[in-house]
Image 1 (cartoon, rainbow, N blue to C red):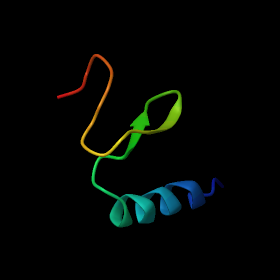
Image 2: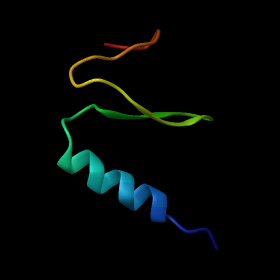
Image 3: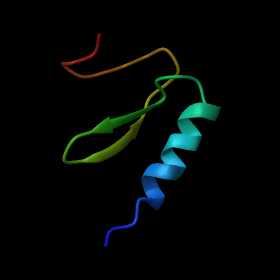
Image 4: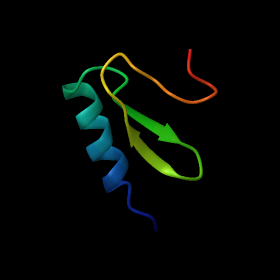
Amino acid sequence: MESNAIEVHVHHLRRKLFPGVIRTVRGIGYVLDKPGERTGDNAS
């Protein structure tokens, strides 16, 4: 059985921080961005 402790903590951080600061990168993990700023090819 897998633990979802990391996902729960990230969920709480996302609610407390500026929206969009924590971004999930599939196959890599999580990335912290500056508030209001996104980088990468898929930024919209």
